Length: 399
Image (tube, rainbow, N blue to C red; front, side, top):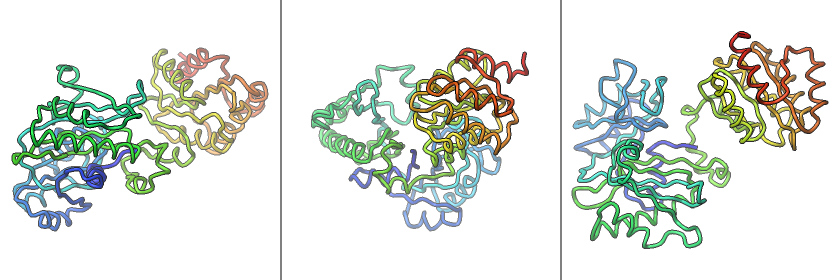
């Protein structure tokens, strides 16, 4: 689960980390009061969307002006002007794609006097099972471009969970970032607090870009991009309360209500599969035969008929879907349960696109019989390769 920058900074502040004063607003009418409360003389007006690259982004609407989604205001009138231009308009960044995201809230923040911009992030390293730090002197830039063009400027290290964060980790960060004296001490304190916050809140990723050195010689987190492990949210109702459903795909929201692992993609073939590995293989083989999957959807190993019905409804609700592939290997999940769920869903929402079903495993013959006797126009498949070829052919009109 992702949260907005201003929410992330509130989480950081909870752990005693240095952030600027700021206030979130939801309408242009609130801009003046927020600016007066902060005092100025400089304010930063920041679009709040779940995507990076806001500063370099562009608004689709001419009324939003030529500047990006992060703007420096030198007067209260400018704060008000920027708020009117940005709120309600669609911001397109390198991470949003061409569709962009509508800006429904802004964060107005005190301006900072910056001497140096640095980069620091934390993430879960799947290879080692540890929390890893990624540190660079190239703050404020596209870190992917830095990694590609000058990889020697990015340093990573992981923290042994048996010891947790230690003083030498802070010293290493200070050394990599070229911080000495009091700043090195601040770096050690900052690294310790970041790690403790990351662990206690079950974060998946925390990115501070930039982490700045101010002109008066202190470190400050000028940005905060945080995502949390959805599997651990039951422990953190205070984090769940920060969820912004307007930033999420409606189909993914519906899927989460039924405990379905669903991610919307850009293709035309809807997929319903049991097991993450099999789902990834299904996506790959669709691409192998020249088409694109419309979603990743794992119904899980023990899904009920109702859960399968809900999954099918979510797939068919996507207007991009031109065909559906159901690929089930029955283990705990029984093929007859899948078959009944598919039939129930088709009878409820109708079937306007080709449907290919491949069943194998527990109760496979019973599942095939249920579908065969349903009277539905379903294309059976013997294996995954056969299924992929048949759905691709059906989507292309049988060519």
